[in-house]
Image (cartoon, rainbow, N blue to C red; front, side, top):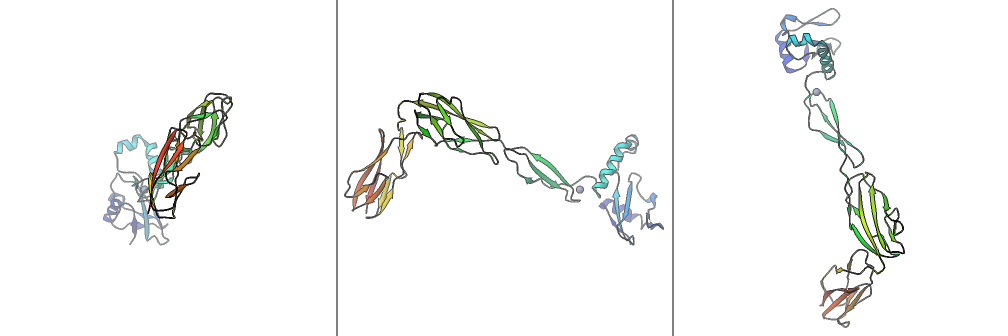
Length: 290
Ligand SMILES: [Zn+2]
């Protein structure tokens, strides 16, 4: 018995009409009358002995008048159906990412027909460029340099393409983002431009006086140490371009000492206060020695 491969509907129709006959050339002859008029079909012998027959619906059932009127469309439809073999409408699964988009390039995603395996691709839009800066406005003393400007938060694939100064007579910037004030006061805008084309600005104010500390914060406001142990204070000074010297002092060096680098050493049981100073700002750390 011939094995019929095709849509369930068609199989039912063919099987219901009886087993087709073989022609001498090995083609299978159906009793045409047994098939509904609106279905055209073709078959392919997929095995030498013709025991397996592949059927393809050439046209979906449709208004016969419309078929007459638009023969080109019918031709197109039949081609499409042949390409996708057994069914008229693909049954696609969800789109899956083949290539993730970046800030510079579109991505690709594909979905596959769960019946015939036909794949369909579509482009995924480039990522929106983003950039964060740790400061968008800085002060510098004349001739002072800083490499404290940090760029972060870039979209995948993006990177810094250039740094540019609006006024190189006042401020210059190199390709690594090192900003240098020249010998006169004034203003300039540094522009950071990414490969995606996205850019952000940093306003620079060059002044004659040194940049003074506005705030100091410590990694710990209080610490308990065993006798003989040590702890290192790590102050953060604001603004980022402040380079005023940070100094440390202890209220009682017999209980705990502090070095010029902020290393506290416990000497004997008791309590002390370590004072950290930069310019006119100061902050305290309470130390208990056990
Ligand atoms: Zn399909």
